[in-house]
Image (cartoon, rainbow, N blue to C red; front, side, top):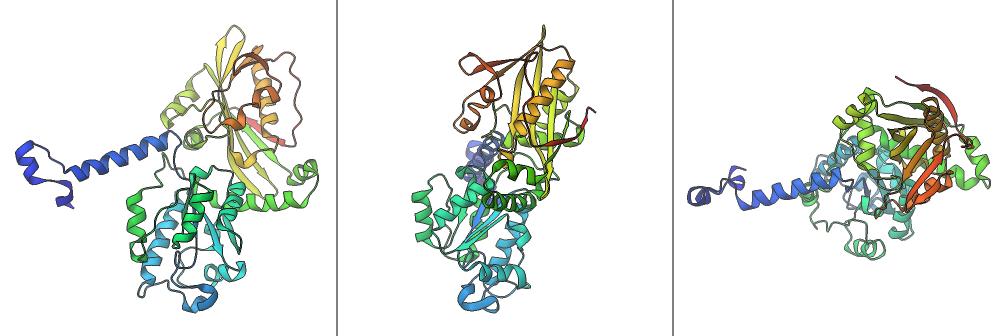
Length: 397
């Protein structure tokens, strides 16, 4: 390692204390960190199974014949799975996309004693005989993240090329032919740099598994109101609290689609907001009959004086789109601002390549245009909007 860090002749002749290859590595790592802080990072790994997650073909070899564990090439797949498990613990989503019968594909996860990954580690499991590009599109619909946040790993060059052709935004690494090189190759690629980590990140897999069940229910009903009623959603709306500053910062760093102005906040900056009397803050936790979504939305309001305020930040997880969270939250914002004597709330949409989703958010909620991408809401005449979510309670501490 010392030899790769230091070029001794260059140290002597040019006072260059680090090798050029090491400086390249530092530069790449620094760029990855900066990109992650701008919300540009990968959130999901989509995995083929046969000869990618284990050696052999489970449909032909059975679970007794696949290679994973402590012997031979099985060690390479075990180490690779351990690395993937570490990604899960950091909040990276794992999904399966395999040409296989689902029951057969799941056998290794359920019954092989040396599998590191289990079904509870997989957020979305797609095993059928459809095109992998089509299945990845279905996974994207469940996860509601951009294709550019996805990485697809498959040992088959033909499958990789098909996905590259049909889903060009998905990152498709050219895995080495030798499985023993999978792990060092992926570590060197450094595709999963994340801007922050919180103790709730490990819950993300469970939350997406619950969302998959919700989507199955949504497909079985014909009336959206009936679907929303059946979820029995309950929200808790509060001011920002010290115990959730890491998650709040994460939302500002991770969220790109439902993000009105795309302002990023560090943990330190969130802590400052909590203390700043010139701002009103709102965070939303949501749960329903399937489970707890956790903290899924936040609004930051800047108080301008003279009875006016403006929306600094409005972010929501795409997992709760069309659940009437926006209507509920605006009602609560208006109620609190009224109590503070605020008569006008200003809003702005700052376009980015990814947030077209919220281009019409403000006018849909009753704001009037006041300029290009600028809006205003007369709080005194605003009528409360209908929502299918009940409120557990508001905590102003």
